[in-house]
Length: 479
Ligand SMILES: [Zn+2]
Image (cartoon, rainbow, N blue to C red; front, side):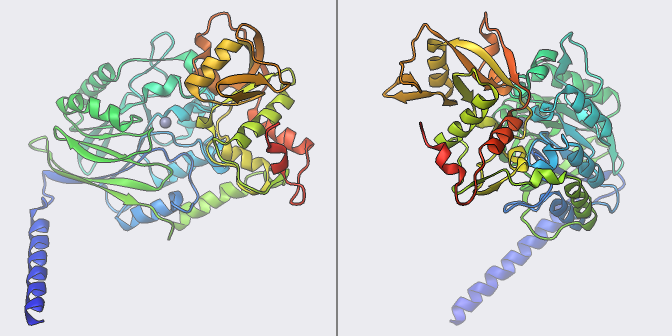
């Protein structure tokens, strides 16, 4: 027993000694060595309010204040994009509520995400005007190759005497993973060209330290890291793929903080102003579990909640069992609702990629559908041949309706086999049109048959009343 105690005491002593030594090893701030703290989020997707996994933005702010945000001048709040497409509280206001809250928290710069275009270019311009922080994307041009008035390639922010040059890149998926209008009006240049150009501009504008914030997935960030290191970029923040990343490549720190305000990355940088170099840098990922929240941000979010129109919470149907994003019941629900809005449609195509969450059991309201389908989409109609439809189903694995499949063969719901050469009326949301490359198919005449894919569902639910006694579930069985 005595031997055990002495080993325990020895280990404890060793641990204390190591911790003390470690603290002594941290650089001390001097006249020239300055300490900066970067707090980094990405893909918040309008998760203002707490969920089972997140304290929301009021919870996040509470944590940051405990770390010292608001005291002194060493904090830099940055975000990697996809700010506002998400729950009804953000989507209903087309991101205005999210930007208002981000302004109040004190974000300093945000990289453009593909979903920041979900409400159209004009709305994005309005959000950029509303934001107290710049939207950064050095790789985006208009269709004539000119820069856009509401995007910047970089910005310079002085933090604790260090002039930090913050560069921004958006994802190459910007034009294939959002609305048709964006794809038609915007062009991209390569990450490499944009990065070289923006880094040179920021340096000549006087930046001491370079940081890149981006909407790039981990795999792309790793590919770009050697060039970022060569350009002297200390930190490369990513986004888009909702990954947690904390790694170093050739001296450049790669970070990403997951999604939905579930957590954040804290980067401590010690920068020597005289030698113009980073002396020490380290990053940690920290969870934002539900708990305490910052009172002023919490009440700001509550004011937006109170501003939602009451009719959004009016029951319009009842579901006994939840309906999964990729389930047959989801395909059936979308098919019935969209065929009702576009009555000539024979076949419906959809993708679960733009279905944000399952349909929850219980009363259904219009707000439910803003939560589930947060992007704006019209319903489009065109003719496709049986062969094109089968190719799409087999290559893209969409949700579909109006067709039955058995052993790789397809029938229409009236029992007639799908003919390869025959043409069928097919209805799909705009996002499918872009995502599945339909606009590359020549001789395709597209007509818009409904303005709003959500309203089509709300209207259909209202015209087919369901209740706890007669729930929607029965209508969602296969024909
Ligand atoms: Zn994204």
